[in-house]
Length: 298
Image 1 (cartoon, rainbow, N blue to C red):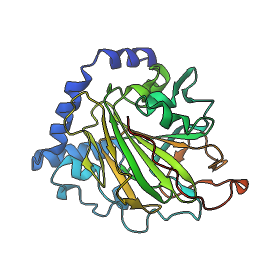
Image 2: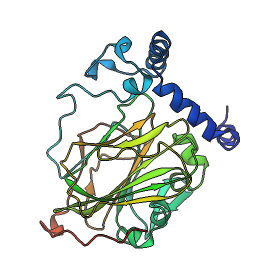
Image 3: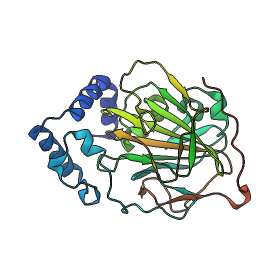
Image 4: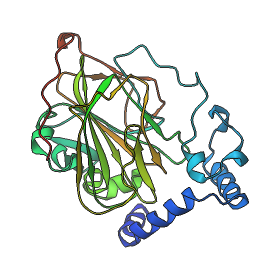
């Protein structure tokens, strides 16, 4: 099937019902039927179970348990770097934010304002900054970790479409990552300043969860939701888990100007692994700075 037909199918498919059904199947504890599904999936996508804390496919009570499986201790050591890669996956795009535009694929861009749910004041902090867009394929480890230390300030659940986020769809659907359902997490680092991690939903992504909230989009009401954590101390260290996908998707990160110089080896389509060198803080950027006041919600 040509790329054009694959994209057309994305527009025609009943994505919401398919995603709801997939979520129910993934959460079901179906005994032998669940084990058969897990074995089929692991074989089809070449999942490497040797890295899992539990390599016994038959021991997982649900597909979600298998899909969000933890890794064995020590298999993803953290690089000695200011910023480490937060996931296993592949680079979709990485580089500078052009004024307030991010590159999605050749011929397609989207804005930071649209990505964060329409909050122009929040988006303005990242004007002329840097971004990285990382795609998690079905075979990958699907927990998301912190690229650096950070204190949670805010979380926004933005309702939206549920297109696939694979490379074919990224090339063919304009504004894909600003159209799909997503969870926007704003953090502040005492050294690196504010940064954003966006968990982007997709077709058959049953839900997205964070370690401080649990499942964020269990009920899709179609209404934007905004949580202010400025009066709480939810601090995560570099490498700690911050969330997970119940079926896979994409993470988009935003950094303020002068915050990060990306690993020069990073380029579109390059595979990446959790903990590897993502970037360093530019030498001229200076050292510790006090956190900025919280941007107003909404």
